[in-house]
Length: 126
Length: 319
Image 1 (tube, rainbow over the protein chains, first blue to last red):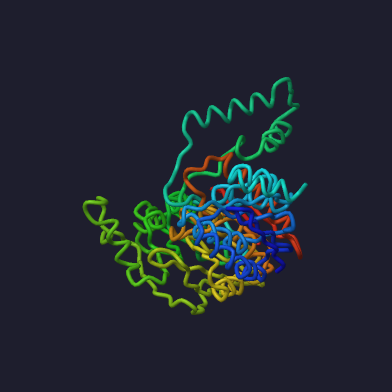
Image 2: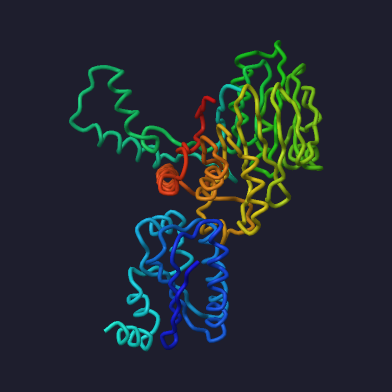
């Protein structure tokens, strides 16, 4: 699974691409692992940019749940941003808004999580 | 195997419509009928049917009890929740005490909500009736005897006059009972539960309730897929949302609508029936979950469509 990540001051932003079905859920888990470890170590928030995800199964949602548990144990926040329509429906049906914070865009997620990270994001997107 | 009939579909605890609930349904029906006229009873019934179950009826409140109509003379039930009481009354009204019958009953487990109908199961009190209660639990018989012992119930199990026998089934075993092949599967639930796969006449029915799917072990998932393989009907514990089932209510022993769809799709099953409804949910909530589940099936479909329904007390599904 393709996954690009960047660090914006005190927030990690990870952007996986593709279809998170049962076989790919493990790949997402493996790809996220080092980012999660770093976020936990530094108690930094994680924003998952899901603009490149067109489907997510229950196994994929479970990967997000485990990431959420890991971060919450470190008093760090996790958010999902820029959901495409179908994954958005799946999140709603699964009631996953109770597990992770959901934002329409990465920028809006950052605006809620960290002023410095938002400033860095805005600077980078100008 | 001809038909599946639901006598109880609720999880954990029986529920009943309140006066306020009935009033709400009547109000909504009258509002929908405002300004309309009906030429006769047929037109009126068509209108009522079009209102949808949350307004024209109810999903009901009895706990788990499902009848398998085999086409033979012997009765087959899954679980003995409070739905067993109306089933027993109907059976007795049909046959009377002078015409003994045989009842085969497959127990998912012996938690309260799955056995609480038995003390009110009239056929158990009638001499000549033959009752065989199947299950995988070592304490199957003691659970039934205990719930009718003081101080829980005034009529002791020993006073039951039917010929009652408890039959222990091993998980993974296959049997021929009441003309059907019956496969038994161990499921994840506090104290264990058992699923049953019934096959006869080219039809397959899977009864899988009080079964949690943690999604941790691919081999476990593959086992369920094989158990559901090409089933004509899977009656599935969809008590919680996925988020609840794998987070705050993890280890509570239940599953979700989403996992039900995914397992049935992987197994190429034909029909998923949501079952063991959360007692907190009213009719509108269950109808909304059904609509969402159908939508989930639609957006995740890769092969033949999977029919999705939600069980209600009195529902019949032809196989």
